[in-house]
Image 1 (spheres, one colour):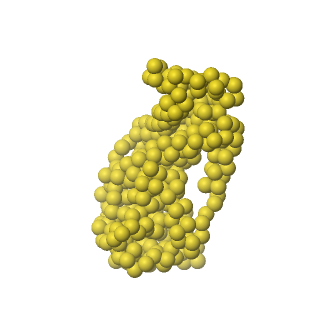
Image 2 (cartoon, one colour):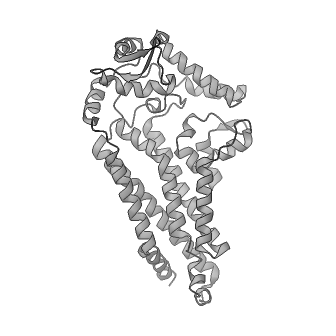
Image 3 (cartoon, helix red, strand yellow):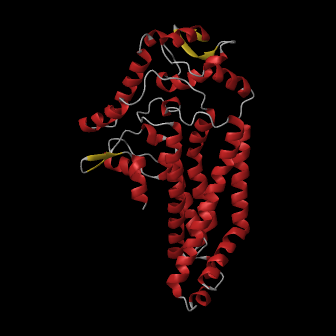
Length: 356
């Protein structure tokens, strides 16, 4: 009987018109965005990226690139000369370190990596890290191979970057699809009839909760597949085993793109469960689907635009544990550490424990 009630609740969620529209719309939108995001010159980009595959990003490569850029006031600016487009994949890596103005005279020897180190140290100082925290990061940085070696990685890299939007999609789906899980019967004046069953209120609520979690996880998987399949077909899967620094040059994590994709996927699924649980809890408390939706949309606005000043260390660390902070890639270059006992933890390591 309990199984029948569970299946009945699942059927209500999966066949609800608003849920079908929201989920179908999300999937179609993401697929179209993926397709339309492909630039017209992508085939040329991929061909040139293949030509650069295996090249070491060092002084020799920078000397080749120097004539490729136009100059203003003695500094190279982000405008590649015609015929030198083949260096665009390398520029995508060095620009986060150098900014829009590139001074190739600073890249002699290991100059680019010295500049990268300087940028990182500036962030460490700005975030007020202790000497012990700096030592921890230096240990990780020592494991990052330098100079970097370029390999084609467009597929995994684009998928990694796309996670920054998925957290918001799953929050919206939770707000739309689960806000009425406990409130709908009250609105329809059927709550007393359902709650007087011989299984009791607790059992019925747990069944509804299980059905809600099942629905949100299914929705989360469909959403991620709507990106994964097009990216794999269009860009390929090559590059998952390459260093994270090819995507996030200022990161000191000695991991691969594929490893960080796994981290993002875990955080994403945990976020789906967390959002669903909070949504259904609010539904129980308010017994009003519209109120729940408004609360979650209000949180979404705060999540998008609010920022905690870095001088408020504890508050900033807590704020960095929210799912979207990690999914938006800030976790890869956020050097703040959580100190428990003798061990340090990064925000993406502490987040799953905090969610549970």
